[in-house]
Image 1 (cartoon, rainbow, N blue to C red):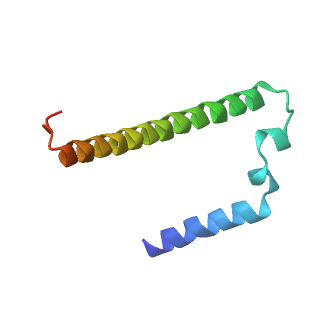
Image 2 (cartoon, rainbow, N blue to C red):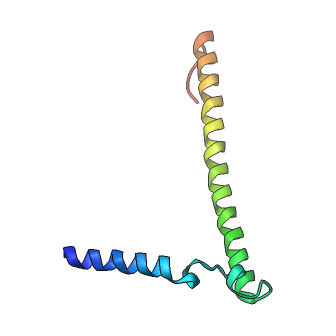
Length: 84
C-alpha cells in the first residue's frame, strides 16, 4: 500500500514537472477561436453564475434573519405578542 502511494506521487511529480503540455490550457495550447476554448469559457461562466447564486442566497437569508431578529427585539421591548 505504501509503495503504491509513492509511485502515484512520483508519477504526478514527473508528469507535472517535466511535461510542458500538462500546464497548457486550451487558450495557451491551441487556437483561441476553437470550439473547445469557447466551451471552456462557457463552462467557467456557468460555474461562476452558480457560485454567485448560492452566495446571493446565503446573503439573502442572512439579511432576512437580521431583520427578523430586530423585529422580534422591538416587539419584545414593546411587550407585543411575539407570534409570527
